[in-house]
Amino acid sequence: MNHWNRVERRCGSWRWIGGLLILLPGLVLVSDAMAEVTLRCGSRLISRGALQIEVLRACGEPATREYLGSLSEGWLYGRQGQISRMVIFRNARVSQIKSGPRL
Amino acid sequence: MVPITRVWRRPATLLGVGMATMMGVGQAAIDPAAEQVLRSAGAYLAGADSFRFQADVSVDEKHDSGLWLEYSLHYRIAVQRPDRLRATVTRPGETTEIWYDGETFTVLAPDRGVFVQLPVTGSLDGALDTAMAQSGHAVPLARLLYEESLLPLLNMAEDGFLVGTDLVAGTAAWHLAFRGEDRNWQLWVDDGAVPLLLKGIITYTGEEDEHRYRVEFSDWDLATPLAPGAFEFVAPAGAQSLEEAMIVDEEEAQGQ
Figure 1 (cartoon, each protein chain N blue to C red):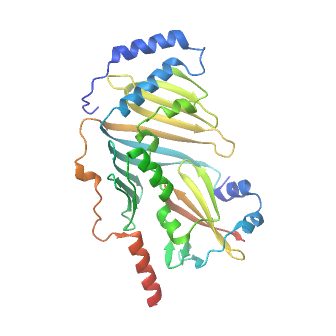
Figure 2: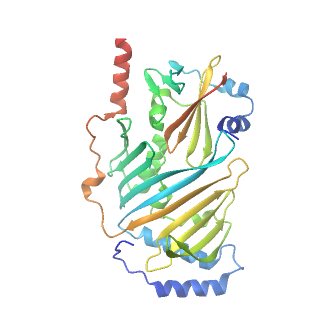
Figure 3: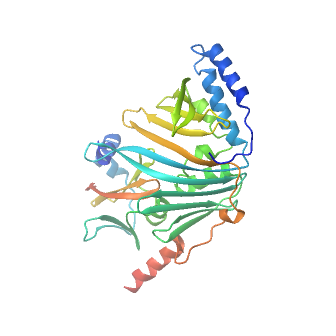
């Protein structure tokens, strides 16, 4: 079961999550030319290697936090009507940012 | 093994383990022999004014492909009681440095040229709790760094026993096994002059959380504390605080 499936299974339907999402002003989801998914929060571009606290301060509290393992955690960002982003942390650093479904 | 100044009374330990084994196996939920070894290891570490060690950590993770993959980290950790910590966590292409000097908890990502500082005071135990709560940044092997050290592991155990003796990197060790509500753990404790932790494996047993966490310790040194200045953060050239970096981002965004 991958991270998405695991999160989906824990949270139930994405529609349910969408209902809980906090609208985050200034949060824009982008993908760069190398197809690495990134997350822009205000003026800060969040990418692989970012510190967990860096993401928290730039993007605010995520809609959901999911425990994904001993050193792994997934934070869901997005707003209704947009493609969501799941930020996967490993050892408190961003290891991956995944595109999610439209909320 | 590095030199260690404290002398551990091994015969007493062995006698205690032997008596506990004879008296306790199969009767108590936690085998007294296993409890005694664990308490010895915890007390030894808790009684140290300073210690440092290295650790290789490996964690299983279910990959998107469906395969279970193992990834690894390397820790270098130094503690000076009551309120000093220095840690380095290394992964390929990524290093995280941590300092606590009794007043400020600092996390530096050298590869990003960014550091974060949190004003935290007090003993190391309280500082770790506060810093982890505020930053979300897990301090590596934090449980081991607390003054109570390994003892909370006993409270978490539903049962446990002394498996016997084993080898860890050629060193003879007591092999302990414990079962908890949602995880089982094995510990290997040096059966020589000092009861230091050599290895640990945690097996998470939850249906959605089934994985293993393995740590092997090396280069324990309880005799040579780091120089006092080693616990004080000095920003390397080119590094910015996160606050500075975010202001620069904002200025660049406004200039465009």
